[in-house]
Length: 294
Ligand SMILES: [Fe+2]
Ligand SMILES: [Fe+2]
Image (cartoon, rainbow, N blue to C red; front, side, top):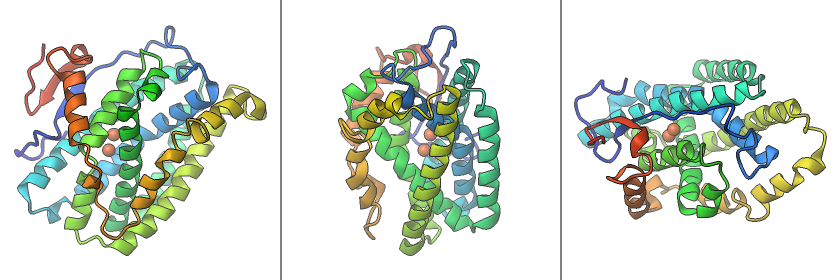
């Protein structure tokens, strides 16, 4: 997977990592000890394996429009990174399923059904526009997570590596789907329209999964139990509300993901996670193109 093409991208390497998630040792409320926010992030994670498979497919369908060898190499890196995210998030999802969120399997089947409808109902360019929209979401969240020490500190140390590694790579490949969309002749009206549609469906489906998880924790009808978590997300520090300007910037006709320069941020994080003394060096099993592995 991810090796269809000989050209490789140094900026978007495929890092083969391996994390261990022990359901007996990781607290079920792994984010701030807060069930509302932990189950929200569990809900997001549930979407990743199938969602990222959809991203990869949508890019592959229009890859033949890419003539720039550098972008083609980036596509290879993108495919490799997303495949690895799916694998590790699946391991994480199995952990919280073992901890009691047993509705996860049924919800993932529903997601598969939803994505099958999208594949059947939308032309390839619109499917890729949906990927661009969701890649904008992941890029915003990734940048916030990499810049915000407090947000990272609020994660249990056993889970933090999964999200920081994923954040680094989402930021590394944030422009790939967008550039393929443009190479395939994708225009502004479709991109903006699909963003609106994607936002509605994404929030509705995430809320659906989150509600099921809250119900399994017997918290759905006890809003006083989860109000604190909701306030933390939306009011203070209000991580999601703070992303609104970045979200709206997507509607500028001249928008490009690289408008937000994350070059220095990424250099710092590559070194911090995978440098010679990197925090995740021990989780690295290999990298392609080659990266020396301790
Ligand atoms: Fe990803
Ligand atoms: Fe991505």
